[in-house]
Image (cartoon, rainbow, N blue to C red; front, side, top):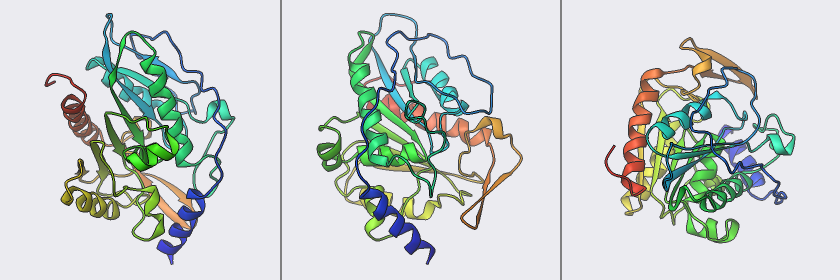
Length: 284
């Protein structure tokens, strides 16, 4: 029954009406140092960061989770800039006057999040210090599910004006076990290099369906890979949670979260190697 409920929900979401695009306020002038906000409160405002120098640099567009823009996005931006990438952190919700977009109260769907990311890519290509050929997407939870879609040429043709990223990294997406809800997960025509990063103890977005789908596509020769981190929960990169378990109740279920510094370092190593391989960058 739970799987059926999720499947019905996903089909409904996939068929929800399109939302008008809004001005997300992408900056043109980058900051060269990422100063972490240092607060557990919801953050607002898209931000642009770049290494010092004229470039052009490869770039990464970051899309946050359904919980909104938080410190972890800026921590990833700091790592990326330190490794020589431009980082565009998108605030998907603030310009829409949304503070939360989690199940069952979705206000914007995954297609819109993917369209925002594509708009961010287009913006980056207009900047002289960005190498427009080498732009990747890094998404978290809901942002990751948008990234899975953006890896598909059929989705890009329908929703993104055929515009695609050079590579996609998806942190802890939710994957439908089976049925029509598959639309919001891996597409059978995935052709963009895709890395999926999962936590073994994720009870909000169980990993088995993601791994099964990733294996199926990889067996067909599609550029899909994944990593499973032991003893790791959903949102394992949220440093403000601390390393003690934090629980949340939703829809009669209990979800557990815990920051895992070891898994974050592993995820950064895996992400950095993946980006270096697919974004025209020398070995890190």
